[in-house]
Image 1 (spheres, rainbow, N blue to C red):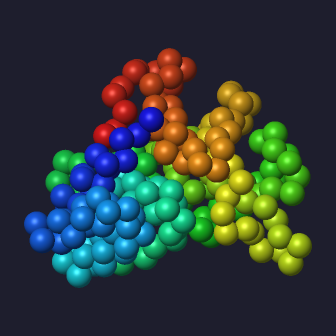
Image 2: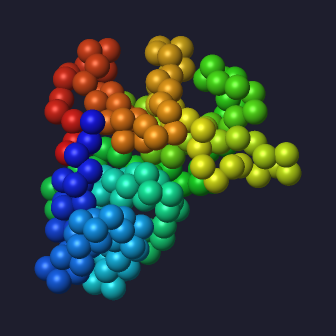
Length: 188
């Protein structure tokens, strides 16, 4: 299980002290949505460069509080020569087509939309949305699904709607599996 307060402290530490305190004050009084709005607006205001892993963490926290998507694409990225290496990436909305739910063992009324990918092992964290009668996808996912890069290798791991943090943890630890070669520490 993820220590959500630790995630908030780590994300707020990206900001100047006053803004960081405002974000944590929101967390402390139970105003997570307001805190997330402050976090993203302060990151944009100060043009804080964030790596892909941090973008993913912000996306997952926003998803947890019903606020995804948020405008992270305008935030600068760190120089690629700074030694940091992000193995997680947000999948562009139009980069891959949704899969029918039946292809991963879910109900046929669901579409599985890739969301976060691991560049090390090729696995993907996807959101399974209901296909609404008018053709759009439901706003809130019914499930989170971790898909293997090769669908024949491992069955997808399905998580409940409140299991987004657990699904991210499963994606992060996917490269620790022996069939992916060397065991490595998950990215913090």
